[in-house]
Structure formats: C-alpha cells, structure tokens
Length: 122
Image (cartoon, rainbow, N blue to C red; front, side):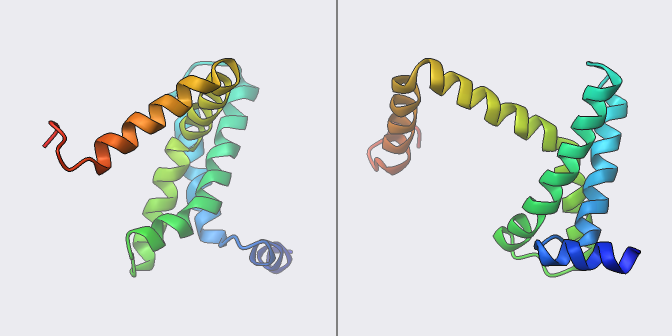
C-alpha cells in the first residue's frame, strides 16, 4: 500500500519526505494556533503539508541546498508557515479584487525603488 502511495506521489512530483515534513509542521501550527474550530485547524495542517510538498523543491533549488536533511527541515518550516502563506495570498487576491489599481501602483513603486540607482534607500 505504501509503495502505491509513494508511486502516486512521485507521479505528481511530490517527494514523500517533503509531504511528511510539511504535515508535521502543519500539525504543529494547528496545535499552537488556537484560533478557529478543530476543522479549520485540521485544514490548516493539510494546507501546510501541501505547501511544503510543492514548495520545498523550489526553495531547495533557490538556495542550492544539497544536503537531504536540510530539505526535510525546509519542508517542516514550510509546513509551519504554509497556512499563513495561503492566507496572505488570499488577502492579496481580495485586496486586488476590491482595488486593482492599488496593487499595480504598489508593484510599480516597489520596482522603481529596487531598480532606481539614485534611490535614497541606499
């Protein structure tokens, strides 16, 4: 049974170790954060696991991590913050739906500050 689950996860591009590490992080977040019902906290743990499963390879590639133990730690951390990331993205989406011009202005001013060599932020 476990080999079938591992084969299915590999087929969709998920390493089981990342999923398990993210699930552990999501469970820790659900236990620590007492807001919401038990179902909301269980869903938060599942979302943390999914975030870790799909984002861990990206973060490993981004930081050029070679040690597999570090991958597990990254998966755990993404599991802990996964629901917060999802909530933040939903909030950004709702803000954009209510006021699309504000997001465009914010991104434009951010890019100007980043790429302006005469910026006062230096």
